Image (cartoon, rainbow, N blue to C red; front, side, top):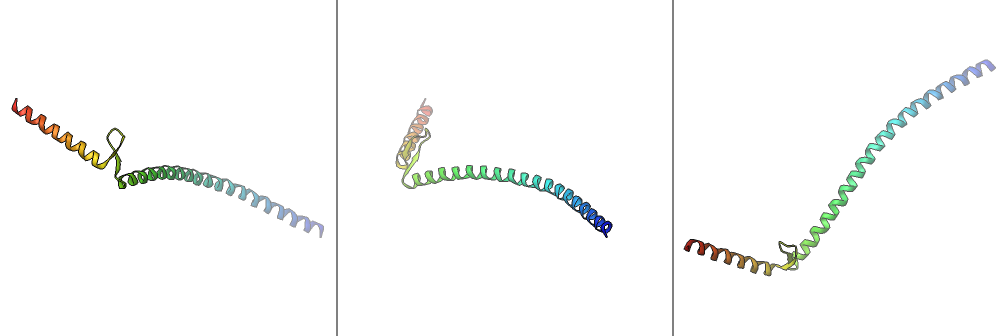
Length: 104
């Protein structure tokens, strides 16, 4: 009776050891998968932050344009009407210069 119990307990122990070794192998595999997913998550979060910043900048620009304000080539604030006047003046200057060149 004792020998049979000992054999059964030894068999159970071997099964548990085998199961534990398999679990350890699976743990290593799962940890590698978690690491890969964590890297992807980190990259996506960084990309999301960049996109959020770009969206915020675009929204601010849209609000400024909607309010009739924008920036000129130098990055200074200028109204759209002011930019149109500057553009018309530049066109007029260019037209005058072109006429002077053709006269010479």
